[in-house]
Image (cartoon, rainbow, N blue to C red; front, side, top):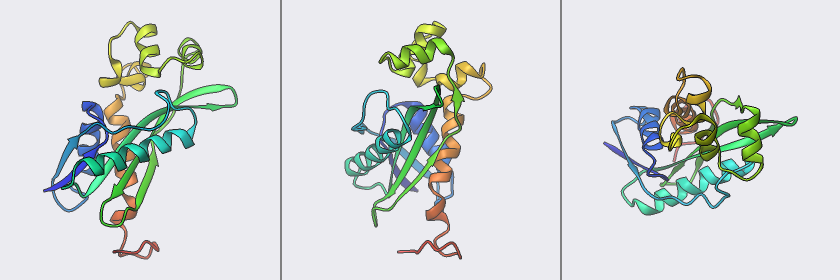
Length: 182
């Protein structure tokens, strides 16, 4: 069994980390959620800030769980593209043995004008979603993507491929990719 530390106690993020790793690391995964400070605003804006939050969470998780081989950080953010606000997330996977990090993002979707207005006004996306959609704590459930896709894709399903893709460099170290094994 391989232990991974997840920089959040949010069950959506912990479950996504477990599912995203699957048995890609060569054994079943024990995903442990811990408090992992993002070091960025409560609502990160832009890819760079969201990536920084994911990396900070992954490193904090790794520091908090000495037996973990990998730290995983998932950070949701919003990105303004040509005046349109999109939601997305970034995943960072940091390996303890060498400190290397793999990064990958989720898909993105446009936020409705009312939600975007609230977020631009300083509200966190989860709170804006709850207000507009009449929900409570949706970020520990379906998330914005679940609300916007009417349940076709929930937050866990959105995050799982990002976790898997953040592992890519660790899965291809002995191939012709140019990534070098320890």
